Amino acid sequence: MKQQISESDANMKTKKIIMSVMMLTATMTVGAQKQWTLNECIDYALKNNISLKKKTLTTKSAIEDVKQAKAALLPSLSASTNHSFGYRPWTESGQVTVSNGTVNSKVSKTYYNGSYGINASWTVWDWMQKYNTVKLNKLSTQEALLDSATTANNIQEEIAKLYVQILYLDDAIKVNEESLKASQKNEDRGRQMVEVGKMSKADLAQLTSQRATDEFNLVEAKSNLSKYKLQLKQLLEITDEQFDIAIPATTEAMAMETIPTLNSIYEAALMSRPEIERNKMLIENSDLSISIAKAQRLPSISLSGSVGTNTSSMSNNDWSTQMKTNFSAAAGFTVSVPIIDNRRTKTAVNKAKLQREQYELDLQEQQKKLYSTIEGYWLDAHNNQQKFVASKASTESALESYNLLSEQFDLGLKNIVELMNGKVSLLKAQQNQLQSKYMAILDMQLLKFYGGSKSISDK
Image (cartoon, rainbow, N blue to C red; front, side, top):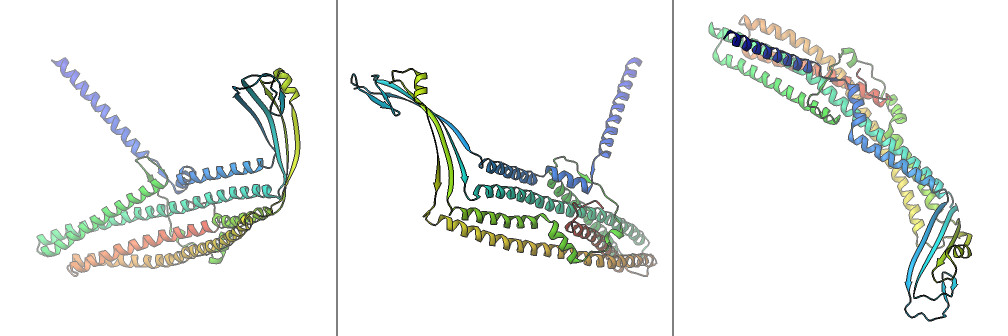
C-alpha cells in the first residue's frame, strides 16, 4: 500500500514538473516574440510584397524585349526540308517526268520527292528602325525599374503612416488606462462619500457612468490598435498569427525639428523622385517612336541567300548522286521602296506625336501632384508643431486644474459635474498632444523622404 502511494506521488510530481516546464516554455516563447522596427518592416516589405514582385516580373520581361531587339540586328538563318509521296495510277511506260526541276526517266506509279535547303536573310539598312527599337526597349526597361521604385516608395509611405498610427495608439492606450484608473478612484471615493451621506446616489451614478465610458474608450483604443497592426501585417505579407512592433523612444525634439523650405524640398524631389524620372523617360520613348514611325516612309535594303538540293525516287541515280547533282546556291539583295501604304505610316507618326503630347501633359500633372503632396506635408508639419506646443501647454494647465478640482471635490467645494468636466478636458488635451506630436514626427520624416532620403528611418 505504501509502495503504491509512493508511486502515485512520484507520478504527480512528474506531471507537475512537466506542466511547469511547459508553462515556462510558453512564457519564454511569448517573451521572445519578435518586435518589428520600422526599418525591418520596410526591408521585409521591399523583399516580399506581392505588388513589388509583379513589378520585378515586368522588368524581367522588358529585359527580354531588349535581348530580342538586339538579336533582330543580326542575320537570320533557317533550315528546311520537305518530303512528299505521290501516286500516278496511269503512268505510261517510257514517259519522261520532271520533278523539282529535274528530268526523271524512271517509271513508277508511286514516288517520293525530298528537298533540303538553308536560307539566310539580313536587313542591311532600315533607316535605324531596329537600332531605335533597341534604344526604345532599353528605355522601357528603365521605365519599368522606375515604376517599381515608385511602388516601393508608396509602400514605404504607407508603412510609415501605419507604424506611426500604431505608436500613437500605443501611447493613447496608456493615457486611457490612466484615465480609467482616475475614474475608478473617483468612483470608489464616491461610494465612500455616499456611505457617509456627503454624496447622492445620482452623483455616484454619474461617476460610475464615467468609469464605464473610460472602459469603453480603452477597449476601443485597443481594438483600433489591433486593426492597424493587422493592416501593417497584411501590407508586409506576413501570415504569422503573432505580430508586434518595437516601440522606439520619441522625444519632443523629434517633433520640433526645423522644417526645410518648401521650394528646397520640391526641387530636391524633382531630381530624385522615380515617378518624375519615369514620366521624363516616357517622353524620350515617344521621341524614338516618332523616329521609328517616320523611317517606315524610307527605302530599306536586305540581303538574302540560300543553298539547297533535292531527291526523287523517279530518278535512276542514287540518293548521294542526286544530292550532289541537284545542289544549287543563290544570293541576292532586295530594295523595298514604300510608295502607297494606305496612310499607315502617316497615322503611325501622328499617333506617336500625340502620344508625346500626352506624356508631356502627364509630366506636368505629376509635377503638380508632387508639389501638392509636399505642400500638404509641409503645411501639416507646421500646423502639427504649433498644435503640439499649444496642446502641451493645454495639457499642463488641464492637469493642474484637474488636480485642484480633485482636492476641492474631496473637501466638498466642487460638484461632480465640475470634476467630470475637468477630467474630460484633461483626457482630450493629452490625446491632442499625443496626436500632434506623432503627426509632426511623421510629417518631418516624409518631408525628408521626399527631399531625397533613400528610406524612411526609425529615427
